[in-house]
Image 1 (cartoon, helix red, strand yellow):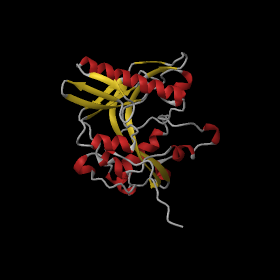
Image 2 (tube, helix red, strand yellow):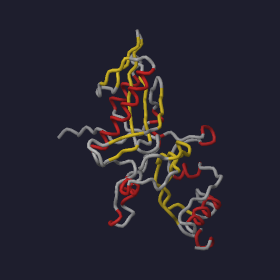
Image 3 (tube, one colour):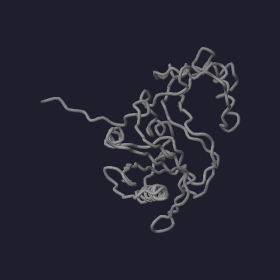
Length: 263
C-alpha cells in the first residue's frame, strides 16, 4: 500500500515495553518451537504487554506520528520485520489512557496498564489458528518440572553461600538460615524471558511484611525435555532480587474478589 493510501487508514496497536535486553535463547519457548522441539528464534528480548489500542490513526496527527506510521507500513513489505524508529511514546500512552510521564521516568507503571489478554489476540485470528500464548504452559507435568528446576538451582546457590535451606513450598518456597540470619525465598521459573512472574496476594503481602527478609529468585530460559519420565530440565538464566518488596507500580491485578449485594 502506498503511503498516501496508508495514512487514511486506522489500525489496532499492541503496545509493549521492552524489559530485558537481547540474549541468545537456549530453550524452546514459542508454541511452534515447543511443537517441533527446536529453537527457531534464537535471538530474544523480554517484553511486557501493556495494552491494545483500537482505531489508531496513521496520519501525521496520529499517536505514531508519520515516522512511526510509515515504519509499520514498510515492515509489511519485509515479511513483518520491524523497523526501528526513534520516537516519543507519550502520544501512544495518552491514546491508551495510561497515566505515565515518559519524559520524567522513561518507564510505565505496570499497575496503570490493563495488559493484553490471550482472548484479545486469539479473537482476531481465524479459528483454525487458535493456540495458547507464549507464556502459557498447559502441561502440569511441565510446569512442575520447571518449578522444581528453578527451586533446585536456588537451593544450590544458597547452600554454596553457607545457608541451611529447608524447602517449604507454602507459605513461601525456601527457608534459609545462617547463624542468626534468616532469609525467606520465593522461587519462579520460566522457559521464556524474565519479564514478569505470577504472584498471589499472599506472596505480595508476605514480601512486604517488615518482619521478614525476602528474596526473589527467578530462573528463565529453562530447557525441558518432555521425552523422558520424569521430564528432564537443564540450563537457565538467573535474576536474583535481594530484600525484595514488590512496589505498587510493578503490580497489575489479574482478578478481583467481588462482594455481592444483599438480596
